[in-house]
Image (cartoon, rainbow, N blue to C red):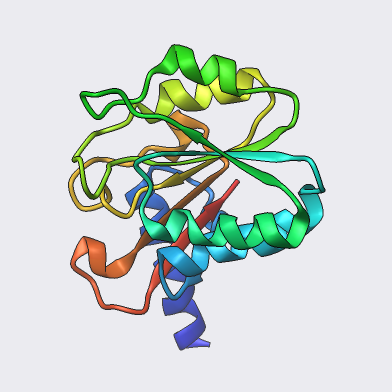
Length: 177
């Protein structure tokens, strides 16, 4: 009973860390990749079908590419890549053009591990939601440096790994609204 209470209090700590009161929306995984794999398989199985599309950016880490490549093979979906500008940024007006009726998810990194680009999560999420598209934010590269505010951003999924915030390896977090 005591161990369960300690474990569950961990959810409260994580919920506070990412800016939500919904500790019941916190799922512990082994890391960012497993979190995204879980979304791709569990959410994907229920929500994706042949002909659907998922938008990723050209700046994604493999943990936010490979699970969707596998989902594309399994479900017959298409991956669409939101290109980056020569300055290493995302063009928000271009997102409007990409968000067609066949898009079922937008998955993007909060901070690029290669470019260091910081993406405007709230603005991107608002645009996607205005088209009825759910959003997954990979915050692995940002969690230790930038405040996460899922309640303010209104993202549907958020992932990061414990070791990226100077914690132990083998612990990941998936927030699922």
